[in-house]
Image (cartoon, rainbow, N blue to C red; front, top):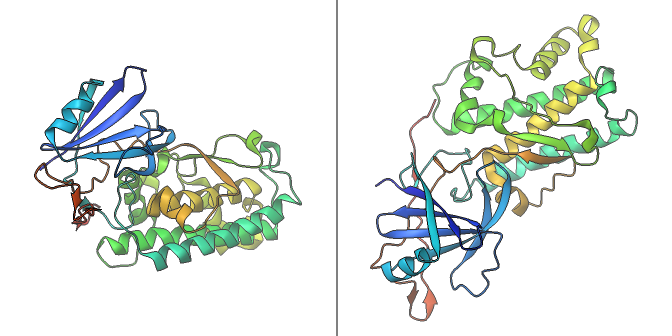
Length: 314
């Protein structure tokens, strides 16, 4: 059964989102105080402009409850979902309802990222991150660029492997297939402590017809790794910053905002300015059906957890 997302506004013009699965529904209430709603839970979702917003969720298992809430809202748009409830791809975050992740993999990925960010902070003690300094290069920046780029490669490989991508000697011609399904070029970040540096879109322009050179920072890494004597000048501050931004994006694109925060990973270096909008193809947890009670024996019934891993999407 497919799910339809309804976009609605309340009488105060606040945007709601309703996911419907047959007669069962989930109402998402962005940034609202719902502490008095029994069974509500929190998370992170993207608004229509791709901004990250907090939300609260309330699940209705009876038509009466849903109809009462609908009287308070005006449906303004319907967005058919491409996903079947309970369907997902491993290590590919698509909205707040994504299923539990591999904790060991998440922890290892965030530990590696924290180590790299510490080195970036050290570099900023020597070179102020401004656009006018983007062309500054040196041996320490080369090391940082190589480490960050190989960490991104490690994430690319992990996602392909987790989704049963055909084995072989993978290259950027394989990795670029992640661009569309993970919406990597829709993540825009900024340096948290140096916002004047401006927007950073680490995967902008990634093109399958020229999968290595269309990523400037990755092409620079590839060149200076194999030919330091002639290509050291490409190990620049700008390339290193974009490679570290790619590390941050890949961490969240795999594990989601909530799981990153739960893993005590704090993005001291980067803030998100824009993130993908997931409404049409967000993962949807299987919903309680109308004949399933919210309470059983005086306690809340657990939400359904019948996830089905999708076939290789590449």
